[in-house]
Length: 123
Image (tube, rainbow, N blue to C red; front, side, top):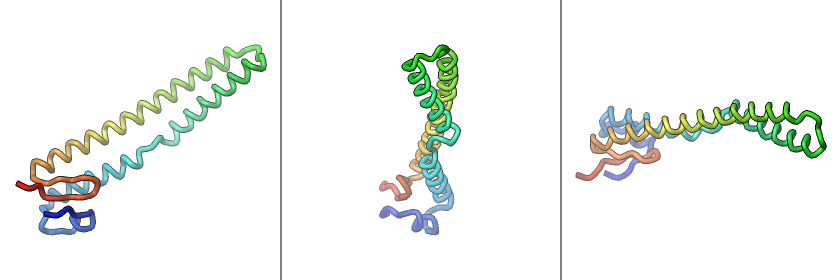
């Protein structure tokens, strides 16, 4: 069977409904993975962290009397930035794991899904 694109296999009655459901689920996970970028909160934390690094650098160069406060705030912000980055990586790993599980189920039923395309595996 030739490879079919999403509009072709989604409405094709020759493909079992369960296979179409799993393939559609994989398609939605792929779409979500494309949308799993750094969230607004993570970007805000990274920007604030960069701003604190710049502020501390300027304060040290100018001879600010209390750079320890700025350094402490920068380290605090670095913790939030690291937490945001780990959350982002966790979401990516969860989505990839879901894709692998769904693909394994499809392949046991004799179908192959890759990036929106579905085809029947040759026996």
